[in-house]
Length: 473
Image (cartoon, rainbow, N blue to C red; front, side, top):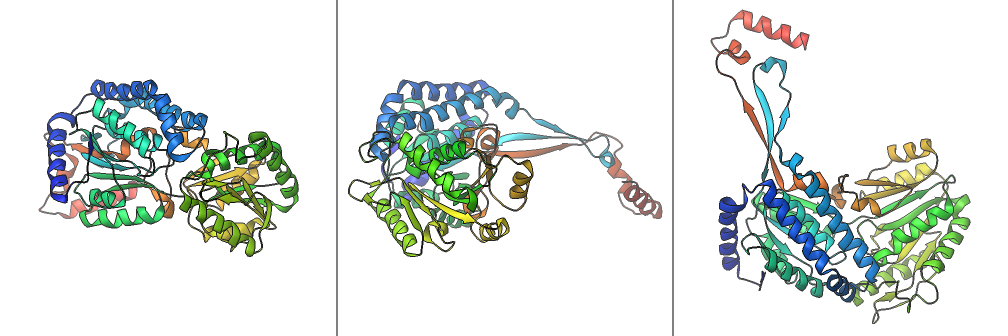
């Protein structure tokens, strides 16, 4: 069900209806019921995959193959993983009891949070909307979905899906711009899951704090890749190129900057250039496998970053040109980029790769420490000692060793950032937990218990016994 922009009072009434529906119908839904709902989403996605990929291509200008790979396949994979493991996730988890509480028992019950608000961006309009929805449904929640207004065709299809598969009191879609998002965030929902930019995420958190609404924030990332002299440069270049130019560089896990040892840079650039010519032969402007920037304004912003960085001393290896009208920017490589250049200090979120020569890894570690903590860090090395060194001197939400981007679709790993790149984890079990309240249950036996030994009135022997226990422990 898609709703027009309602007044705050009207939205509050509908939210209350959703909370009642959750309490009476959804909260205690069985594993079988939840799996059935997930299966229905999977079937709908498969049945409408052509329509969805066409809509994604029309909205953001990426090739159909990338739409299928990054949106449909990844989402179906997430559904399969969740259905396969849901029984174990829902099962109460027994915990060991401390010896001083002998006779008692404890366990953890996973309970749904209630009505969750999911706000998704435009860059992966199916995956980043449906995957959190899958986690929310698996955990037994009702959901309000707010897709991006920059992906209108895809949003309409997702609206159709929600109306076809769900009671509007369980899942509803609300379309609109930033004003609608602000209205939704101000509602007394039970959880907010937001994927998008850091500035908007900060604003959402500020609003949520007024009601103490818990939030999961999956934010941006100025993601670095570190390349040392032991790396396989041909393979590294291929993986860097795909990780940079897939979706036209518009991904939270896309590489922002490559920090490479000076000795390998000439060969690395040569391999990157060959890889680009292989990926996008002829003119990228007419190559159907090369994507577009989402809007003219985004295009202008990225072109400005290139120009300002070149003015600061960066060397343009290839590309650099574009058209705001066509939302097109050539695959661009900058090298000898100074550490204060705009492409280093800002998230590019476009088809531009900045390469920084490394004279001292300590200097780079110090530099990275003073930048926002990235969502992802990519290390290219065949030396275990160098990998350990890089890991011990850097911070990030996730790490890719000799690979980029595809760790995002590994549902056996938690996904999320730190500080400016977000907090809270998603995907697989961690997505299920994000939409759950881990309720602790402690049960005491009848009769004599350990704690009864220490009831008042207090006696000297109790103090003596406590000191013995403390020493023994």
